[in-house]
Image (cartoon, rainbow, N blue to C red; front, side):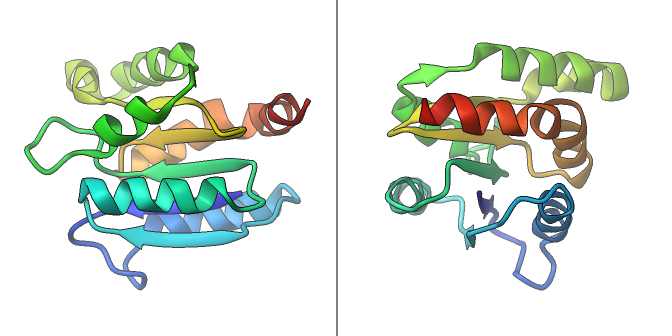
Length: 151
């Protein structure tokens, strides 16, 4: 599994999401094969996706850049790459998020799907959103996603 944080303001030292996900993944007996922090620049996001799709990681977790501000470009870059979209991921994430934050959940462009025999999962960059997505959607299906992508 590989982790990517997309942020113009975070540093490796301040990346709470990466620390949380690395520990959560390893606690479940999985291995994090790579971690990258990139700016919210389409070329950087696309480049890291291509690099990781040539790696051994089966699942790539990307957080950040899913909002609607001018700088938010993760969804735009990744969604164009997806060969098969897991539409339920975004739908369920927004439903779960709505229960916690209300109508602001509609501004999330969380998305997941497959690309070059990898599963790409994109979540908002807020620590709460990352934890919600991990606990309710990603972690419960991690084994199944890894199995499905390799068969």
